[in-house]
Length: 551
Image (tube, rainbow, N blue to C red):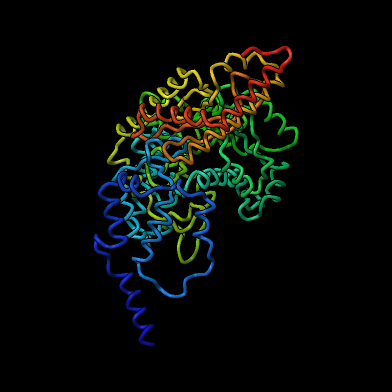
């Protein structure tokens, strides 16, 4: 070995064995974050000073560096190319997506989790983390299903059963729920050895059907499309049922869609209820959906990735009535359990449901072991259960109840501010803590319901452009942020979709003053020349209408 190679090897050895001093390079960043994460992010993130296209130039080299480099040099890359150009998702004015400030204790616990580097696929690489994960799943299971102590005494650590599975998020959780439902429907029977062994074609022949379908409202999360694709059902067999004017699944349309499936000899695999739609935060009539699922004999899954933690609130738990009847439930801990990204869960009412997707291997996941990887789609996984357990223990049920109640109350306050403002129009009232609205000047609001459909469509298209322009400018300025989406507005009920601002009120640091500033910043942007040009186009349209529309 050459002298240079030996020196490089010694340096590499130090990387694996010698931690940095707190006042050096990455250590200094780590200490600054530990002392005051909000202050660090506020001072160092300047994400919107450069466009995405400009930032992409910093990441345009495909060659892997040939030689090792100093950590101090890489620190500069982290500070200037990553930290500075990241999105300040913890900012109290960032109210456009399902991200929030994190409890301070999540940071040191995340470092402990990383340092331990446990792999939850098998007990041999996780030991204490395996029973911890089973305990967390039992805690959330009990929150949903309210079973008695003896139920958990029997099943929480049973090696041949599982109450649920941890995963990276709602997409894998929803997929796992439908995967288990599919395999349970096509269990081994007679000469048929099950879908896991013989595949879909033989499974359809066994049940004498032409296919399987999943029924869900049009407000469904896009992960369900991925699930039907991955499971071989086909995206066309994700049946999107119309919603009512409150963005909940329409039960009459649901039954019509079911009858159409029967005519085509398509068997319903699952009915999916949504507890907190991504766009508007509404909750489907879960109790009535549970009745219908029982009537037609299909799996009832509830996607509560967002709204599940509402169950902590004694005041608002009733909004999710019927969830306790679900065969499976998705909850994302990285949403309203305030855990860092990458922590989702799927819970199953029956402890034996996951046995339908059980897998084993000779070197791990042996029969009779308590290896959690035998019941999960993902193999190697970090010990995210530690972070969820910390939240449940430190914040507690009453703490989460306070956070949920605060978010719902803040959304209602914001809705009031929008309603009281002459130039904004509330589109969907918050049921949980998400709402939508749009800019609509006072001189136009009374006219819209009286316009003929063609003219209304033209005016709404121009209002759509205004909302897009305002949202884009607000995002680029980086002071406050709301997202945008397109949906049908109940008050017009003409089937037309409109572009709206979408606000998510989950950050406990967001105040009513900040929400007023969000609206004020949008009003300031409207004074811009481009937006004023669009408003003038609306006035011209109305003036030229026959008969003329007064403004």
